[in-house]
Length: 397
Ligand SMILES: [Fe+2]
Image 1 (spheres, protein in one colour):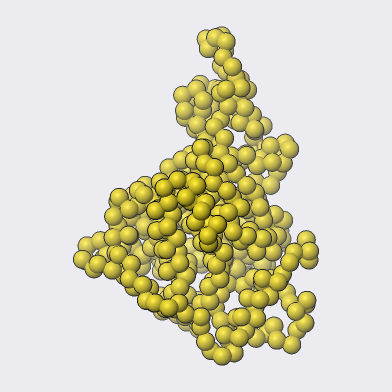
Image 2 (cartoon, helix red, strand yellow):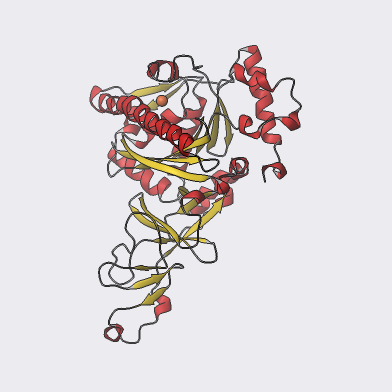
């Protein structure tokens, strides 16, 4: 399938990376940016981020490999909204507010599974995989009710490149195409629709932006991660942007391995190396521990400004054999340790120091264009008054 995809954008990035690797240069942004420190601890700012970003833009809430078969479902909470994703017998993924039309409780417990129908655990009302109200317990007591008016509330959803995005506001008109800015076509090179779900694990983190800054940041790798994996790593990154979505790639000497190979023979896997972030809350990182693996880190804001929840979802390009699976398990445990005990432990300390230390600003250097761009998009989205204004941001880039 990958053969038919246009690889020209990928190869242009390879050539750009090779040029920087050869010349030992970096594409730097014009200015050092000072960001007000209260962006990380002010509860009012946090509330506006949840309302104006997480409740308005498409969120990558699931991957195809988590729910590949008809009847598969996934229930989770995003920005406080309970969401139910359900794949029908027709293979189509639908999304709903996970809330019974009788009295509102969740019709499916959080997690994943396979179900022919959803039965509310409170009074037993049942709903189809398409969210239609199917059965009412003691129906006579509800009189001549029009069942077609009492389905689960639908949410807009799109499944592309083996990834599933949902807008948690039922009234949204915001365009998926505008939001994705063509980035989904790059992610399609992975072919995630055919990958295998290995496992997932949850890590509690600090403020979502403190956590997310780290995913865009290679500058810290040889310092914070010197005892785990970072000692020999470059502290530099090249950033490539499609709207607010950014690919992060080191100008590593490894890129010079492409030299002397005809471009049509370049390995797509090698061309995809580095980190692919999806605004506002996803990072996709590549690993190979016997079998090709990605870690999809899905960050969601917690209940308060100083908390977030990260689910690390591990996919493998094929079903691993027992020996490979053991290696992937080891990789999962290692990455849990790195993120929890190095990145987020540091983030919690950073958060407390900013909140209580009186520092007015934090700095992003000319080498940290990725985080600068991320915070610019956060500001733009919060400033956009409605879905039309939101869409305008993406049209104008
Ligand atoms: Fe890190």
